[in-house]
Image (cartoon, rainbow, N blue to C red):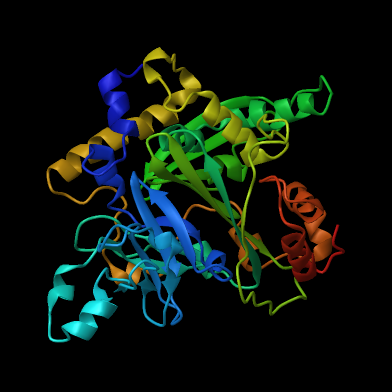
Length: 419
Protein backbone atom coordinates (compact mmCIF):
# COMPACT_ATOMS: atom_id res chain seq x y z
CA UNK A 1 0.00 0.00 0.00
CA UNK A 2 1.04 3.60 -0.55
CA UNK A 3 0.44 6.51 1.77
CA UNK A 4 -1.92 9.28 0.58
CA UNK A 5 1.10 11.57 0.28
CA UNK A 6 2.99 9.18 -1.99
CA UNK A 7 -0.11 8.57 -4.07
CA UNK A 8 -0.41 12.32 -4.63
CA UNK A 9 3.24 12.44 -5.71
CA UNK A 10 2.55 9.88 -8.44
CA UNK A 11 -0.69 11.38 -9.69
CA UNK A 12 -0.57 15.18 -9.55
CA UNK A 13 0.74 16.61 -12.83
CA UNK A 14 -0.01 20.33 -12.85
CA UNK A 15 2.67 23.04 -13.10
CA UNK A 16 4.87 23.09 -10.02
CA UNK A 17 3.95 19.61 -8.79
CA UNK A 18 6.85 17.13 -8.47
CA UNK A 19 5.46 14.65 -11.01
CA UNK A 20 4.39 17.46 -13.32
CA UNK A 21 7.94 18.78 -13.27
CA UNK A 22 9.36 15.30 -13.93
CA UNK A 23 7.10 14.53 -16.89
CA UNK A 24 7.85 17.93 -18.41
CA UNK A 25 11.45 16.73 -18.88
CA UNK A 26 10.31 14.46 -21.72
CA UNK A 27 8.91 14.94 -25.22
CA UNK A 28 5.24 13.93 -25.19
CA UNK A 29 3.16 12.73 -28.16
CA UNK A 30 0.05 14.90 -28.32
CA UNK A 31 -1.72 13.70 -31.48
CA UNK A 32 -1.35 12.92 -35.14
CA UNK A 33 -0.04 15.40 -37.69
CA UNK A 34 -2.84 14.47 -40.10
CA UNK A 35 -5.44 15.74 -37.60
CA UNK A 36 -4.61 19.28 -38.65
CA UNK A 37 -4.95 18.66 -42.39
CA UNK A 38 -8.66 19.51 -42.47
CA UNK A 39 -8.88 21.79 -39.44
CA UNK A 40 -5.54 23.45 -38.65
CA UNK A 41 -6.45 24.53 -35.09
CA UNK A 42 -7.15 22.22 -32.16
CA UNK A 43 -7.71 23.15 -28.50
CA UNK A 44 -5.84 20.79 -26.23
CA UNK A 45 -5.26 20.44 -22.50
CA UNK A 46 -1.95 18.97 -21.31
CA UNK A 47 -0.73 18.50 -17.75
CA UNK A 48 -3.25 20.96 -16.40
CA UNK A 49 -2.58 23.67 -19.00
CA UNK A 50 -5.11 24.89 -21.58
CA UNK A 51 -3.35 25.27 -24.92
CA UNK A 52 -4.03 25.55 -28.64
CA UNK A 53 -2.25 23.40 -31.23
CA UNK A 54 -2.11 24.70 -34.79
CA UNK A 55 -0.47 24.34 -38.20
CA UNK A 56 0.03 27.61 -40.04
CA UNK A 57 -0.21 28.09 -43.79
CA UNK A 58 3.55 27.74 -44.06
CA UNK A 59 3.40 24.24 -42.55
CA UNK A 60 4.84 25.21 -39.16
CA UNK A 61 3.27 23.63 -36.06
CA UNK A 62 2.80 25.62 -32.87
CA UNK A 63 1.50 25.07 -29.35
CA UNK A 64 0.52 28.22 -27.43
CA UNK A 65 -1.44 29.34 -24.42
CA UNK A 66 -5.07 29.02 -25.46
CA UNK A 67 -5.84 32.64 -24.63
CA UNK A 68 -4.59 35.64 -26.59
CA UNK A 69 -2.26 37.87 -24.53
CA UNK A 70 -4.28 40.95 -25.55
CA UNK A 71 -7.73 40.47 -24.01
CA UNK A 72 -7.63 36.69 -23.36
CA UNK A 73 -9.83 35.72 -26.30
CA UNK A 74 -9.92 32.02 -27.23
CA UNK A 75 -7.30 31.29 -29.91
CA UNK A 76 -9.10 28.03 -30.73
CA UNK A 77 -11.44 30.30 -32.73
CA UNK A 78 -8.61 32.19 -34.39
CA UNK A 79 -7.29 31.52 -37.88
CA UNK A 80 -3.91 30.61 -39.28
CA UNK A 81 -1.73 32.79 -41.48
CA UNK A 82 1.44 32.04 -43.51
CA UNK A 83 3.26 32.56 -40.23
CA UNK A 84 1.42 31.94 -36.97
CA UNK A 85 -2.10 32.07 -35.60
CA UNK A 86 -4.20 35.22 -35.56
CA UNK A 87 -6.73 36.09 -32.87
CA UNK A 88 -10.22 36.60 -34.31
CA UNK A 89 -10.99 39.34 -31.75
CA UNK A 90 -8.52 42.12 -32.59
CA UNK A 91 -6.18 40.44 -35.06
CA UNK A 92 -3.07 40.01 -32.95
CA UNK A 93 -0.75 37.52 -34.68
CA UNK A 94 1.38 35.09 -32.66
CA UNK A 95 4.13 32.87 -34.04
CA UNK A 96 5.21 29.39 -32.92
CA UNK A 97 7.71 30.85 -30.41
CA UNK A 98 4.92 32.82 -28.70
CA UNK A 99 6.11 36.15 -30.10
CA UNK A 100 3.50 38.73 -30.98
CA UNK A 101 4.47 39.74 -34.51
CA UNK A 102 1.46 41.89 -35.44
CA UNK A 103 -0.90 44.19 -33.55
CA UNK A 104 -2.85 45.63 -36.50
CA UNK A 105 -4.33 48.80 -34.99
CA UNK A 106 -1.27 49.72 -32.96
CA UNK A 107 1.00 48.96 -35.92
CA UNK A 108 -1.03 51.49 -37.91
CA UNK A 109 -1.18 54.34 -35.41
CA UNK A 110 2.18 53.81 -33.74
CA UNK A 111 4.42 51.95 -36.22
CA UNK A 112 7.66 52.69 -34.32
CA UNK A 113 6.45 51.19 -31.07
CA UNK A 114 8.28 48.14 -29.75
CA UNK A 115 5.44 47.21 -27.41
CA UNK A 116 4.91 43.90 -29.25
CA UNK A 117 8.15 42.65 -27.72
CA UNK A 118 6.51 42.75 -24.29
CA UNK A 119 3.32 40.97 -25.40
CA UNK A 120 4.46 37.42 -25.95
CA UNK A 121 2.65 34.34 -24.72
CA UNK A 122 3.48 30.88 -23.42
CA UNK A 123 4.72 28.61 -26.21
CA UNK A 124 6.06 25.07 -26.40
CA UNK A 125 8.08 23.58 -29.29
CA UNK A 126 6.36 21.03 -31.53
CA UNK A 127 8.04 18.45 -33.76
CA UNK A 128 6.61 15.93 -36.19
CA UNK A 129 8.00 12.39 -36.20
CA UNK A 130 6.51 9.20 -37.64
CA UNK A 131 3.15 10.89 -38.21
CA UNK A 132 2.95 11.96 -34.56
CA UNK A 133 3.19 15.46 -33.12
CA UNK A 134 5.42 15.85 -30.05
CA UNK A 135 5.89 18.69 -27.61
CA UNK A 136 8.36 19.51 -24.87
CA UNK A 137 7.01 21.52 -21.92
CA UNK A 138 10.00 21.49 -19.61
CA UNK A 139 13.02 23.62 -18.75
CA UNK A 140 15.97 24.45 -20.97
CA UNK A 141 18.07 23.00 -22.44
CA UNK A 142 15.62 21.02 -24.55
CA UNK A 143 16.63 17.34 -24.80
CA UNK A 144 16.71 15.43 -28.08
CA UNK A 145 13.49 13.91 -29.36
CA UNK A 146 14.15 10.15 -29.21
CA UNK A 147 13.43 8.47 -32.54
CA UNK A 148 12.57 4.91 -31.62
CA UNK A 149 13.83 2.41 -34.19
CA UNK A 150 10.33 1.36 -35.33
CA UNK A 151 9.77 4.93 -36.52
CA UNK A 152 12.50 4.33 -39.12
CA UNK A 153 11.00 1.15 -40.56
CA UNK A 154 10.00 1.25 -44.22
CA UNK A 155 7.26 -0.42 -46.28
CA UNK A 156 4.67 -0.31 -43.53
CA UNK A 157 1.13 0.92 -42.97
CA UNK A 158 0.90 3.22 -39.98
CA UNK A 159 -2.02 4.75 -38.12
CA UNK A 160 -2.47 6.88 -35.00
CA UNK A 161 -5.40 6.29 -32.64
CA UNK A 162 -6.47 8.64 -29.85
CA UNK A 163 -8.81 8.09 -26.92
CA UNK A 164 -9.96 10.42 -24.14
CA UNK A 165 -9.73 8.45 -20.90
CA UNK A 166 -11.45 9.93 -17.81
CA UNK A 167 -8.95 8.92 -15.14
CA UNK A 168 -5.43 9.66 -13.94
CA UNK A 169 -2.51 8.78 -16.21
CA UNK A 170 -0.64 6.63 -13.69
CA UNK A 171 -3.22 3.85 -13.39
CA UNK A 172 -3.08 3.63 -17.19
CA UNK A 173 0.71 3.40 -17.21
CA UNK A 174 0.87 0.77 -14.49
CA UNK A 175 -1.01 -1.51 -16.87
CA UNK A 176 2.12 -1.64 -19.05
CA UNK A 177 4.04 -3.61 -16.41
CA UNK A 178 1.23 -6.07 -15.59
CA UNK A 179 1.43 -9.17 -17.84
CA UNK A 180 -1.08 -11.33 -15.95
CA UNK A 181 -3.93 -9.05 -16.96
CA UNK A 182 -3.56 -10.38 -20.54
CA UNK A 183 -4.62 -13.82 -19.35
CA UNK A 184 -7.73 -12.59 -17.59
CA UNK A 185 -8.83 -9.33 -19.18
CA UNK A 186 -8.01 -10.03 -22.82
CA UNK A 187 -8.27 -13.82 -23.00
CA UNK A 188 -10.70 -15.11 -20.39
CA UNK A 189 -12.96 -12.05 -20.21
CA UNK A 190 -13.18 -11.92 -24.00
CA UNK A 191 -14.20 -15.57 -23.91
CA UNK A 192 -16.93 -14.85 -21.38
CA UNK A 193 -18.12 -11.78 -23.27
CA UNK A 194 -18.65 -14.04 -26.28
CA UNK A 195 -21.06 -16.17 -24.23
CA UNK A 196 -18.70 -19.08 -23.61
CA UNK A 197 -17.64 -20.45 -20.23
CA UNK A 198 -14.46 -22.23 -21.28
CA UNK A 199 -11.90 -23.46 -21.82
CA UNK A 200 -9.92 -20.68 -20.18
CA UNK A 201 -6.60 -19.47 -21.56
CA UNK A 202 -3.22 -20.91 -20.65
CA UNK A 203 -2.03 -19.82 -17.21
CA UNK A 204 1.01 -17.72 -16.39
CA UNK A 205 3.63 -19.92 -14.73
CA UNK A 206 6.60 -17.61 -14.37
CA UNK A 207 7.29 -13.85 -14.52
CA UNK A 208 10.45 -11.77 -14.60
CA UNK A 209 10.81 -7.97 -14.57
CA UNK A 210 14.00 -6.19 -15.56
CA UNK A 211 14.99 -2.55 -15.83
CA UNK A 212 16.96 -1.02 -18.70
CA UNK A 213 17.88 2.49 -19.82
CA UNK A 214 14.53 3.28 -21.44
CA UNK A 215 12.13 1.52 -19.11
CA UNK A 216 11.32 -1.98 -17.93
CA UNK A 217 10.77 -5.31 -19.62
CA UNK A 218 8.44 -8.00 -18.46
CA UNK A 219 9.02 -11.60 -19.43
CA UNK A 220 6.65 -14.49 -18.96
CA UNK A 221 6.16 -18.21 -19.41
CA UNK A 222 2.64 -19.54 -19.88
CA UNK A 223 1.39 -23.09 -20.13
CA UNK A 224 2.61 -24.57 -23.41
CA UNK A 225 5.61 -22.22 -23.62
CA UNK A 226 9.22 -22.72 -22.62
CA UNK A 227 12.05 -20.45 -21.60
CA UNK A 228 13.25 -20.58 -25.22
CA UNK A 229 10.20 -18.56 -26.26
CA UNK A 230 10.78 -14.89 -27.09
CA UNK A 231 8.16 -13.92 -24.52
CA UNK A 232 10.80 -15.03 -21.99
CA UNK A 233 14.09 -14.29 -23.79
CA UNK A 234 13.07 -10.81 -25.08
CA UNK A 235 9.79 -9.74 -23.47
CA UNK A 236 7.78 -6.57 -23.83
CA UNK A 237 8.62 -3.01 -22.87
CA UNK A 238 7.08 -0.62 -20.36
CA UNK A 239 8.59 2.46 -22.00
CA UNK A 240 9.75 5.18 -19.63
CA UNK A 241 8.10 7.35 -18.46
CA UNK A 242 4.56 6.83 -19.83
CA UNK A 243 4.68 4.44 -22.77
CA UNK A 244 4.27 0.80 -23.74
CA UNK A 245 5.91 -1.00 -26.70
CA UNK A 246 4.65 -4.35 -27.94
CA UNK A 247 6.59 -4.94 -31.16
CA UNK A 248 4.15 -3.52 -33.71
CA UNK A 249 2.69 -0.65 -31.78
CA UNK A 250 3.35 1.93 -29.09
CA UNK A 251 0.93 3.32 -26.53
CA UNK A 252 1.44 6.50 -24.50
CA UNK A 253 -0.62 7.73 -21.57
CA UNK A 254 -0.33 11.52 -21.74
CA UNK A 255 -1.65 13.43 -18.72
CA UNK A 256 -4.39 15.92 -19.54
CA UNK A 257 -4.79 16.86 -15.88
CA UNK A 258 -5.02 14.92 -12.62
CA UNK A 259 -8.28 13.20 -13.64
CA UNK A 260 -7.99 12.76 -17.41
CA UNK A 261 -5.57 11.11 -19.83
CA UNK A 262 -5.01 11.27 -23.57
CA UNK A 263 -4.24 7.80 -24.90
CA UNK A 264 -2.01 8.04 -27.98
CA UNK A 265 -1.30 4.83 -29.90
CA UNK A 266 0.89 4.32 -33.00
CA UNK A 267 0.54 1.17 -35.10
CA UNK A 268 2.75 -0.38 -37.80
CA UNK A 269 2.18 -3.37 -40.05
CA UNK A 270 4.75 -4.18 -42.71
CA UNK A 271 3.22 -4.86 -46.10
CA UNK A 272 3.62 -8.44 -47.38
CA UNK A 273 6.68 -9.34 -49.40
CA UNK A 274 6.18 -8.52 -53.05
CA UNK A 275 4.29 -5.31 -52.35
CA UNK A 276 7.39 -3.20 -51.81
CA UNK A 277 8.14 -0.41 -52.17
CA UNK A 278 5.21 0.94 -50.21
CA UNK A 279 5.21 4.63 -49.33
CA UNK A 280 2.53 6.08 -47.08
CA UNK A 281 2.13 9.76 -47.87
CA UNK A 282 0.07 10.57 -44.77
CA UNK A 283 -0.44 8.66 -41.53
CA UNK A 284 -4.18 8.60 -40.72
CA UNK A 285 -5.30 9.72 -37.26
CA UNK A 286 -8.63 8.77 -35.74
CA UNK A 287 -10.34 8.87 -32.37
CA UNK A 288 -11.68 5.69 -30.77
CA UNK A 289 -14.97 5.96 -28.84
CA UNK A 290 -14.96 4.46 -25.35
CA UNK A 291 -18.74 4.51 -24.66
CA UNK A 292 -21.51 2.69 -26.47
CA UNK A 293 -24.90 4.22 -27.25
CA UNK A 294 -26.18 2.77 -23.97
CA UNK A 295 -23.55 4.74 -22.02
CA UNK A 296 -21.62 1.65 -20.95
CA UNK A 297 -17.91 1.20 -21.63
CA UNK A 298 -17.08 -0.54 -24.90
CA UNK A 299 -15.53 -3.94 -24.13
CA UNK A 300 -15.05 -5.55 -27.54
CA UNK A 301 -11.48 -4.44 -28.31
CA UNK A 302 -8.18 -4.90 -26.49
CA UNK A 303 -7.37 -1.31 -25.48
CA UNK A 304 -11.04 -0.59 -24.79
CA UNK A 305 -10.90 -3.45 -22.29
CA UNK A 306 -7.82 -1.87 -20.70
CA UNK A 307 -9.70 1.41 -20.42
CA UNK A 308 -12.49 -0.36 -18.51
CA UNK A 309 -9.90 -1.48 -15.94
CA UNK A 310 -8.30 1.95 -15.70
CA UNK A 311 -11.46 3.99 -15.23
CA UNK A 312 -12.88 1.32 -12.93
CA UNK A 313 -10.26 2.30 -10.35
CA UNK A 314 -11.82 5.76 -10.07
CA UNK A 315 -10.69 9.14 -11.30
CA UNK A 316 -7.54 8.72 -9.20
CA UNK A 317 -6.88 5.22 -7.87
CA UNK A 318 -6.74 5.00 -4.09
CA UNK A 319 -3.52 3.04 -3.64
CA UNK A 320 -3.89 3.11 0.15
CA UNK A 321 -6.51 0.37 -0.27
CA UNK A 322 -4.47 -2.02 -2.47
CA UNK A 323 -3.09 -5.46 -1.66
CA UNK A 324 -0.20 -6.06 -4.07
CA UNK A 325 0.95 -9.63 -4.66
CA UNK A 326 3.70 -11.49 -6.54
CA UNK A 327 2.33 -10.60 -9.98
CA UNK A 328 2.78 -6.91 -9.10
CA UNK A 329 6.57 -6.85 -8.72
CA UNK A 330 6.89 -4.81 -11.92
CA UNK A 331 4.43 -2.23 -10.63
CA UNK A 332 6.38 -1.86 -7.39
CA UNK A 333 9.63 -1.48 -9.37
CA UNK A 334 8.06 1.23 -11.53
CA UNK A 335 6.71 3.19 -8.57
CA UNK A 336 10.03 3.05 -6.76
CA UNK A 337 11.85 4.27 -9.86
CA UNK A 338 9.49 7.24 -10.15
CA UNK A 339 10.13 8.17 -6.52
CA UNK A 340 13.90 7.98 -7.17
CA UNK A 341 13.65 10.14 -10.30
CA UNK A 342 11.61 12.74 -8.42
CA UNK A 343 14.58 13.03 -6.10
CA UNK A 344 16.96 13.23 -9.08
CA UNK A 345 15.31 16.31 -10.55
CA UNK A 346 15.07 17.87 -7.09
CA UNK A 347 18.86 17.50 -6.97
CA UNK A 348 19.21 19.10 -10.40
CA UNK A 349 20.06 15.92 -12.33
CA UNK A 350 18.57 14.64 -15.58
CA UNK A 351 16.03 11.91 -14.88
CA UNK A 352 16.04 8.44 -16.37
CA UNK A 353 15.83 8.13 -20.15
CA UNK A 354 16.44 11.77 -21.12
CA UNK A 355 18.48 11.76 -24.36
CA UNK A 356 21.06 14.51 -24.90
CA UNK A 357 23.20 12.90 -27.65
CA UNK A 358 21.88 13.84 -31.13
CA UNK A 359 23.58 10.85 -32.79
CA UNK A 360 22.01 8.44 -30.30
CA UNK A 361 18.57 10.01 -30.68
CA UNK A 362 18.43 9.32 -34.44
CA UNK A 363 17.44 5.67 -33.94
CA UNK A 364 17.09 3.99 -30.54
CA UNK A 365 16.64 0.22 -30.44
CA UNK A 366 14.17 -1.38 -28.06
CA UNK A 367 13.73 -5.03 -27.10
CA UNK A 368 11.57 -6.43 -29.90
CA UNK A 369 10.26 -9.96 -30.27
CA UNK A 370 9.31 -9.44 -33.92
CA UNK A 371 12.00 -7.20 -35.43
CA UNK A 372 12.67 -9.58 -38.35
CA UNK A 373 8.99 -9.75 -39.28
CA UNK A 374 8.77 -5.97 -39.13
CA UNK A 375 11.88 -5.28 -41.19
CA UNK A 376 12.43 -8.26 -43.51
CA UNK A 377 8.75 -9.08 -43.80
CA UNK A 378 6.53 -12.06 -44.51
CA UNK A 379 4.63 -13.25 -47.52
CA UNK A 380 0.86 -12.87 -47.41
CA UNK A 381 0.60 -16.65 -47.02
CA UNK A 382 2.92 -16.48 -44.00
CA UNK A 383 0.67 -13.83 -42.43
CA UNK A 384 -1.93 -16.58 -42.11
CA UNK A 385 0.43 -18.70 -40.00
CA UNK A 386 0.93 -15.97 -37.40
CA UNK A 387 -2.03 -15.76 -34.99
CA UNK A 388 -1.66 -12.00 -34.38
CA UNK A 389 -1.05 -11.01 -38.00
CA UNK A 390 -3.84 -13.29 -39.20
CA UNK A 391 -6.22 -11.51 -36.86
CA UNK A 392 -4.85 -8.10 -37.94
CA UNK A 393 -5.72 -8.85 -41.56
CA UNK A 394 -9.22 -9.78 -40.49
CA UNK A 395 -9.96 -6.76 -38.28
CA UNK A 396 -8.40 -4.02 -36.19
CA UNK A 397 -8.62 -5.60 -32.75
CA UNK A 398 -6.93 -2.94 -30.62
CA UNK A 399 -9.39 -0.02 -30.64
CA UNK A 400 -13.09 0.13 -31.40
CA UNK A 401 -14.29 2.28 -34.25
CA UNK A 402 -11.67 2.16 -37.01
CA UNK A 403 -13.08 4.36 -39.81
CA UNK A 404 -13.98 2.55 -43.06
CA UNK A 405 -11.60 4.72 -45.08
CA UNK A 406 -8.68 3.73 -42.83
CA UNK A 407 -9.62 0.07 -43.12
CA UNK A 408 -9.83 0.43 -46.91
CA UNK A 409 -6.39 2.06 -47.07
CA UNK A 410 -4.94 -0.72 -44.92
CA UNK A 411 -6.52 -3.42 -47.10
CA UNK A 412 -5.13 -1.79 -50.24
CA UNK A 413 -1.65 -1.61 -48.71
CA UNK A 414 -1.80 -5.29 -47.67
CA UNK A 415 -3.26 -6.47 -50.98
CA UNK A 416 -6.40 -7.96 -49.46
CA UNK A 417 -10.09 -7.37 -49.98
CA UNK A 418 -11.60 -4.64 -47.79
CA UNK A 419 -14.23 -5.81 -45.29
